[in-house]
Image (cartoon, rainbow, N blue to C red; front, side, top):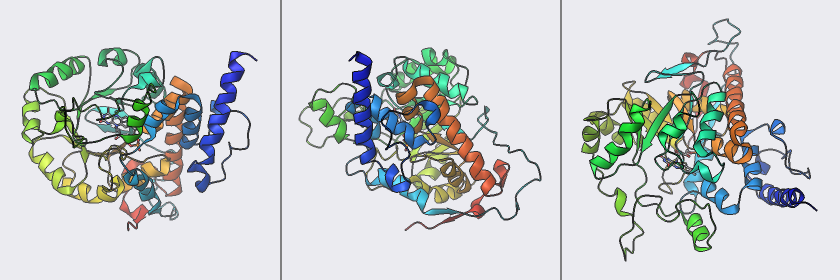
Length: 397
Ligand SMILES: Cc1cc2nc3c(=O)[nH]c(=O)nc-3n(C[C@H](O)[C@H](O)[C@H](O)COP(=O)(O)O)c2cc1C
């Protein structure tokens, strides 16, 4: 038996184990389960299936770091449930159609032109999933109709390396540092190298990441940064599992950032209308509704539930971005119908990267794009401006 056969068998075993407990099974009869091999990329039909292949191909710790949510993972589950609680209306004889057979999904945010209202969310450490890390993600995203990518502050590769790999637009994400010079040292080169916007993430104050903590204790590699979410050192003897890195946040941070950041500034992690209004008062150019994919405050709301009140509070003054839980093109449509200007995908492109590298990223994004177009047509929308609250009925508990 050669090396390939051993790893193939392991892959199949892992895949079978994953599928046995997979949420896929409750949604539809799983088309992969009964087959004794890992499917090829062309056989994958939905984003969920890429997760199963990534699970089969990567180590448990690498998979775990991408999969978990905070604590009991209720918000992680709620992010998905929320999409089930929003009904789509049938196409009422094409009432919002223009009579044209073509669908226009293009849009522009902060001068960033997009073929679809979809970007790649910032996520850490792509080097665990692919030897070329974020360069592969960027290449894959660029090949999927030039999808823009937001590079994580915890990336495996520097901004310039990732930027040079492909041509799709890039924004840069920042976890605020108390010493303003540290923010400057990170952001200024990225902006000079072409970052079109700065995304400041404010939603991780005291996260623990229990599943990754176990992996670290067991010395598994690839379990991410583990314990405190990369928020900086933990003070010796701290009994509350709180990192010192993020407890000093004040709204004036945004005014200070503005003194040297001349590109648009977006605040990521907004979940209330009140915070959205405060953010606007402090001069941000964009609101990004996110609960970090259920990795921040467990038992916080799903993002879809709070989206309408935030959109109302923003009142069209700045663009509203949205993520957490999107897995289907219809999810994109629902978020747009409830007022988002564009959505971002966190785990979905990671599943593409961890299963089939560059081509996996491209394919999984293309699937989301195609499903989005199908959902638009089903609801009689041939352009983004036709998507509004009339095509959805939200019934949140
Ligand atoms: C493995 C992983 C790493 C992440 N790393 C970051 C990060 O470095 N910076 C950040 O702002 N958000 C980070 N996030 C949150 C994502 O930007 C995004 O908000 C979230 O993944 C959206 O939810 P979804 O995965 O359900 O699409 C991370 C999420 C995951 C799953």
